Length: 389
Image (cartoon, rainbow, N blue to C red; front, top):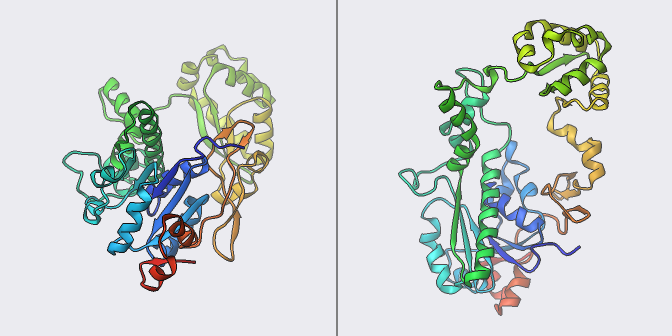
């Protein structure tokens, strides 16, 4: 399949999650993404704890150039590569690329058609030079407040801001590349963590403005729907959401034990059901407690009622839908460990985006890229400027 971004060359100076997530989406869509990392490899390769999977998750379909950016010879290599590139992605701390002489203005002089994407903690303003992390801005932007119980702010259970910020970077790059077709010139684009959180909580900001009172956390939210809850079943938990009157009618038909509730005209509309939630919820709670996950899900799925088991991430390795869709290819995460992981969740044409290459060994493509640019890879490797595999 001809992928939509085939023919584009992206230099990915990203690290940890935000930059690499931007790069991997572009790579999955077919761009040639060159991961620029120091000799010995990016530190993300060596993280432990919950970060142990970062590199393998966000660096498939990329090439690796291992080069010392602080060495003038390494900088010369990068500038030569910039001449051939369509876009650059970086998420270093503020001022880092400027100190290296690889900032947007400097690279625009080398390649006026270059799109330069900076992914930062903050967009321009009073905070722009401050350090930031995903969890920091979740606290700062109110997302952790909305996620946790009252008085106990809680970060989301994945790096949602890093990843969504990287996605905004992709959007900015694609928009700038489209505009380049009209103007012939590249431009600098930027996305950030803090403003991404603000975008995520805008719905809560709007709700507070309309109601005139600050919102409580989602764990204490005012009920919008009578049934929108987690239920204990005999072998775990399920979530069931009844958000329309049609859902309600299908629910009481799917579970005959609730037929008397379905016959009650005082429960026909959602607003009525919210008012009489104290009648409905004990019945559902008692009924579901006698059933298994499989039984509840079979009934809800057959009736097209939104429902899901409360899973752990590792349950997805065996998820029949993900496996059937072809979007979970096997990734070589370490020399010893392979696992199925999802790729960018977009279908182009008739199928999912393919896994073309595994996450690269540090410096895997250094020699080939230097040969393309006319450099002596062995001499530079012996001098410690680059790493070749």
